[in-house]
Amino acid sequence: MATLPSGMTVVDYDLPAHDSLQSWMREEMGHAQNTIAGAVKQLKPFLSWARDERDQVLAVDPGKLPVEWEDVEKCWLSAEELEKIARALLPNNLALVRDAFVFCCYTGLRYSDLHDLHSGNLYDWDGGQVLRLTQTKTRTGVSIYLTVPALALLAKYDGTRARLLPVFENAVMNRYLKRIARLAGVDRLVEVVETIDGHIFKRPVPKWELVTMHTARHTFATQSLMRGMPVEVLQKVLGHANIKTTLIYAKIVEDFQHQTMRRIWDGQSGVTESAGARSSQICAVEPLAVA
Image (cartoon, rainbow, N blue to C red; front, top):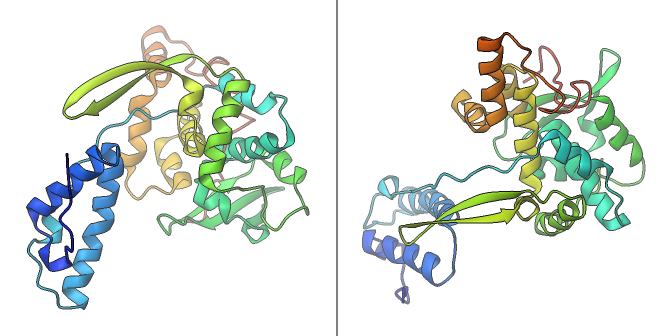
């Protein structure tokens, strides 16, 4: 059984204590590896602050604390699955969450940016409208063209609330989204791979179990690539500082790989109705976007 030493202070925190903390989070708290890595990521700047701003003499260099991230299969919706959710008949409380989620599928917004979205983020552009905002997570400015269905969702809630769209706590929305996806029939079995105590475990789960608010951002990215959006443009609209982050989506989209091979080898178009919704529906960005 993993235990933590009682009464530990900042100056006591060394590599054995670091290992004990991670073991405790894994064995006692049942946290996944990436949750542990996220905690370590937040701990490192705190220890640096204690050393640099409070003159604490540390037993370990915060910069050398290992952060081990585990590759996790990203969950994203196909066009058919997105349409099922968008068209599902739902009770009012679930419909509110569904509309906010689908809007993020059309724009690539994170939950944190959806939460803070207000009318000041709306701008007229070339006969249409765009969103201009500073992302909460990265402080990066992005500009996103609003397609017809995205504007329709905003119009649905126009003038009814302070925020542009209804937003609940993230955990509540994630819980509701699983119900929404299940009711909509997003139930295809997918394989989940987990590493527990160094052992790899694989299990099939219905896809609705994996749907969260962040699934919307993954859906926007993968569907955009399958429609032929240049990776450099997708990088701008997602607000990624490094294009390598955006290229992760190109690696995980099987359809994108198959379309590219078919276009190169068979001379056929790379975009099909089965690969994604009509290009007029989602995934458009403002040319010469304001960063």
